[in-house]
Image 1 (tube, rainbow, N blue to C red):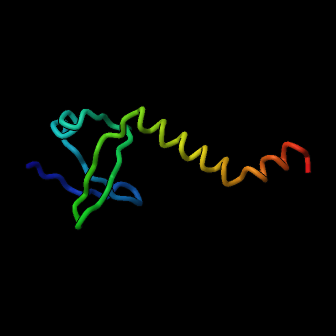
Image 2: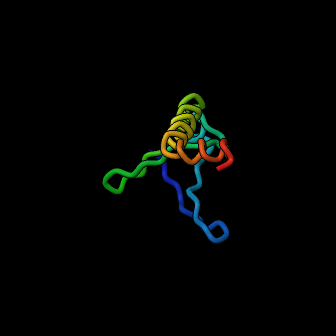
Length: 78
């Protein structure tokens, strides 16, 4: 088990991760991660690029389905 500190960074706070933890997770600074919380336990996992693209595609398709009528009216110039 490894320990880390929560540090104030500007108006926010951040969890500082050691190089060892970054290597174990196979992530780097500025990578996106999924964060979930279960029973006050923070779970962080690398966000797979394929998974990220799929989440974006799902969000876009969902938006198009919900706004279909509005998009059609805009296309018709109504």
